[in-house]
Image 1 (cartoon, rainbow, N blue to C red):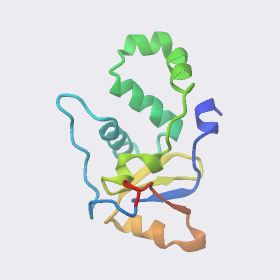
Image 2 (image 1 turned 30 degrees about the vertical axis):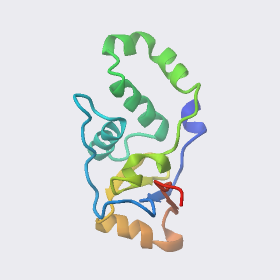
Image 3 (image 1 turned 90 degrees about the vertical axis):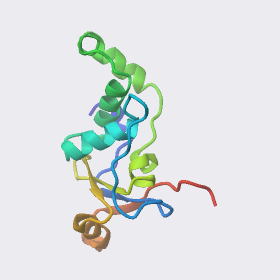
Image 4 (image 1 turned 135 degrees about the vertical axis):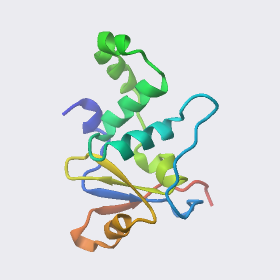
Length: 146
């Protein structure tokens, strides 16, 4: 198992939107000036590729896109980039703006692969109401202290 996945991933867990999430439906994060924000890249990767990425793979892919690292450099320095990136700690998706501010629940399947669900969806409700048969439930971190 790659280093980055061994240290920071959930399995069979559903992260609900934070208690103080300001929206009532899942919304797409907006662009910032002429570049994509990290949470917009997270949203695009997870909504277009459900259950493709583990948390470590997602962090790596978001980093490459956010920093706009050229394909040639990725091919030449992939291991080095990955090692540098994961030499630091990274917050889990409980701290992501997707469940904190944009209304998306985050599901980690048994393999730790991730998909997102809008808070108003039937699937989101099914995860929340599954009880003992369902995934472990956690809330995203609050936006404010208080």
